[in-house]
Length: 480
Ligand code: NAD
Image (cartoon, rainbow, N blue to C red; front, side, top):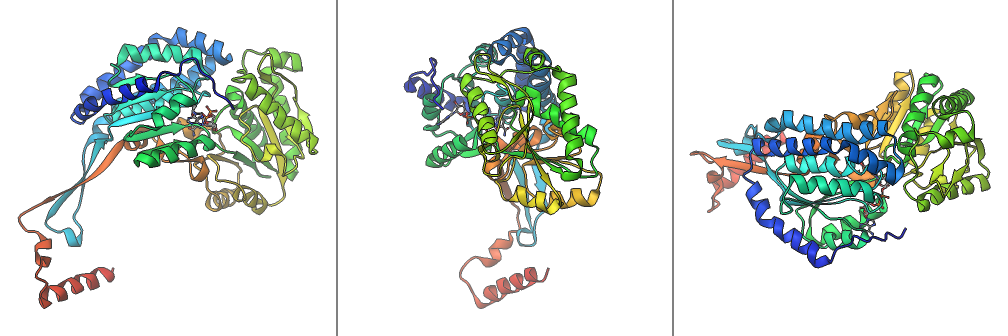
């Protein structure tokens, strides 16, 4: 997809911004918890002051309902700030570790140092949450940051730019707007850490660029997150929650249920309950659903057509349309759509959907469901609905995913004391709370020698006694 942007600044300006942050990054190494908390408080105030401006901007960018702006943009970010303010002193404290047999006589600590100059690149789907969320962790950990939002949310970006300019000097936090060209100019610079949120395809480009400078990376990527509903599940609750998780932000959520694996014996009840839920929440007719103010629009006509093409391809390869199916490029609208009997080779089974379409696949045994998941790249999230603990345990043990919920969807994201991140193609590293603080910190090992140093026993010249002694130590260690 071509990203065109009027904002792309001259790469020399990008470089100048980066260099200007160098001396500040060094100074911030000495910043205290109090300094950092002060900044987080000012950031919070500036965010809340712009609430009406954000509401207007989101309406212009993709008609996101106000309740969803509050629930999925403000709530997580305000909670993240609150958590950091409460716990930062504890996070920053060096952690004492007891000596090992071979380091007897020393004192050891893990010290959290700011990484330095950080780069944060974010996607368009949650433009406040995915940009300001990591920025909170970067500030809590004592870094400078250059932040680049996606070019697809120009109105929201204007509000964020104004906010950042209000709270920070650009040599501490600078927002640079732009598209691919700007992202590439930034990725050419030797940042101390790069925190990227976006697609796996661009994640690989980011990692390759980071390798040129050996910059560390956190990659928060996407993928196809399954929901598994077995024959013992509370079908009504599973359907109601899955439909909510699928349709919030019109399905443009990294951890949205991408597809559903349902036990054959409860499939029809589940589909019926999904249909009813869509009808109750958004309207009984196509026209009512298309007119609801409670469903965000698709971010662009390109993405609308991409999603519609996935549905067309699924139908052309034998899928059944169980609900929805309509779309309008002009209105950037795609109806909530349920698809059944989808061919395994249909594109919708391979590509991240990132829209309000739910393909439904049946299984007869839980082993089939496990094999289906393990035959694909590890997902970012996995959701299990079951009342049988043996099934839940097997599914969790025999699959891998960034995070998982049992009898719930999405909510592991909302828990700021849990790490949030992917595994395999879904990403590297974690965000949120202490895990976000750690992503933006260098865990420095610090060892202090005391008067008695064990190592002195092994300084050259290597006498027979010393050689025997070290052999003895190795033998003792091998016994445990
Ligand atoms: P994207 O990867 O296309 O773009 C993300 C950012 O990368 C944007 O700022 C964009 O300007 C920049 N970019 C695009 N092409 C680039 C290139 N060739 N070189 C350098 N930079 C480039 O993603 P998107 O379409 O904005 O967002 C959707 C994706 O993000 C989905 O895959 C979704 O699952 C994922 N996502 C993940 C999370 C998470 O926390 N794991 C959260 C939100 C979205």
